[in-house]
Length: 319
Length: 286
Image (cartoon, helix red, strand yellow):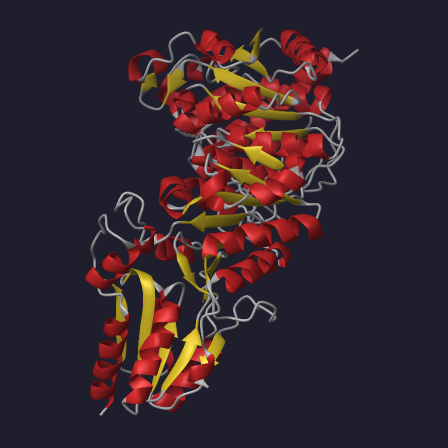
């Protein structure tokens, strides 16, 4: 039931990463961590305190960090790199492409402060292109969990997964609404609620907004199927197609550019397998700016009201 | 005692392999490959403890990384001659469905290659990663990496040098192919490297020198570098080489950086290099 999806408190997804990293440190002696001068921001201190010999401070040198991670993976370690999403991707794209992706290295690139919701630091840091860049790399897994619990579980899951992973999370405190102990499966969509009129596919912070939007729409008699696509690549095609075969229209929601994000992945799948009206809630070919997370998400069209209106447009189009 | 004359014989065959690979592919990078032949031959046949059965992780072995991946014809020849794969496969260099890509890659599963290289400036970082893992695992073997000198214009190199000194990665031996040439001309004209040894020293490395085209000196210097490992500092070797060494008309010029010789030039080149171990057959036969 939609009413049962409630926030049990607020914590940032990056705190979920820090907690998950600490757990995998305890579970697997091959896990090592690297950070480019952002230990506090990435919440890596618990891991460092317990495993100081398995942590490397790299300084402000992200390219070198990616190369070292590739080397550690070559020798059988499972390196987790930590820095902001912008510096985890665009800044070091060629290093990731050649030394990690093309070379099949088991590196976990863990990226905080993704999207507009990092807030006041502004557009230099608000990367909105990272999902697109990373999903284009052959063999890369791309995960964008939605809350503290899911980020913690995803962090634990990627340590067990053989292959390069991009794990994307964020800065602000955010409602916690997924269970803390369910079996998180990479590549397996998480259905929050069944519905019949429209499928909402959301990732990251915007999953919570999709929940809120669905509540508003339910009051108007519109039944939304809510699906949390935490793994953008590989996409759970079966879950998407099953849902759309029932609802016949879709809305995607993400804190990312419209070009290259989750919406594009879903649209590409539907265009090939099941042509369907689809509306995007995403940033429309624009950089961000300074402001509070709430102000920014609102201004750039990523608010709850934007999802509500996208659903109504999608419903109109399927008539 | 390392048998210098035997190493020279291998190097002569490796140089033949380089010329023939590039000729048959009609492209590739002979200049730097020929210049670094003595170094890589000495490393694989006289210095490193390594297993041609090839294990990616390289535990308990000395490990080498080629950062300047464009000198792949040299790398492939040495790996094949050392037993990592059949020398017949050298005939597939740069051809469709080959494991011998234009620049080294792991993607096709070629034994002996541990990371892709070609986009410059990345190999020292990767080598550091393996060196750190060896320290964590109590593995006392060393990690070697070769970079070009033009490659040092990449900023990532200097990030890596800072890290290696700061974290005392003293099981790492980096060699610079100091031939003073790059694609567009002499390094001093394209982008001056300044006082290169002083820069490495200032970054906290212990610096050695050698003439990379004198086999005895190469072997002695590499042994000395190995001896100095474990003293709290990473080791760098400034290796003076001549691009194109061993083929008179290719020597001392950047013009043969990335150009294949024609049939006539190939004949002239091969006449200067004795066939000591037997040429690989061409074309490729299963």
